[in-house]
Length: 221
Image (cartoon, rainbow, N blue to C red; front, side, top):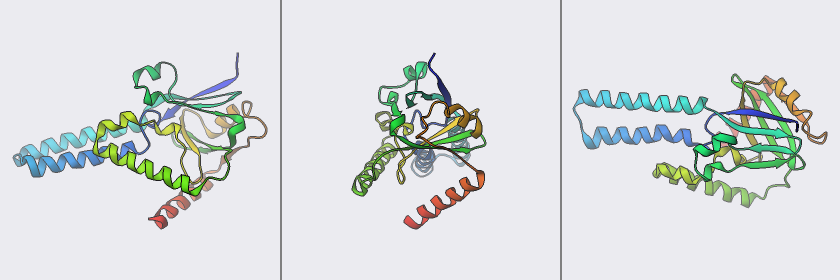
């Protein structure tokens, strides 16, 4: 039998496009404003209606943040990202898109411990990214996010965020349930070739990288 490791991916990135969760509070705010300023219901009804919608919004976010999807597989040939098996039948063709990363196209694996398990970052062995191409990708993603915000069903036409790399630097981020950072390293070590290093980041380094990314985003803004 072929050696492989399958994991449960945390969150909605295996089903919905990246940033989808941020749109749910936005839609709630728009509906609440319409109820308050357009419909102008009685004050007692407005409080109950907005409270019920707020509860539904928080429940939807909590469910999507903690959902588990069969969307990660590593074997002797490489890494497969995206829904697999019976999970694929529940969603449309666009969200069934998968991404296969052969080991020769992987530069490095980084693993960080999380409260829910471990977060794996896959750095592709790609040539230096063209700055104009990266800028164009950012523009397209902003346009797609704006279209989804304006027309909620538009997310059905977008691929899930898990199969698209993050930018600067290009990398795939996979949050995995029910596995520690060390257990994940032990599971991936026999599958990855010697040319692909596996680094387990200590907690202090993870926090330092997070602060650096936040400061970079603040400076760019």
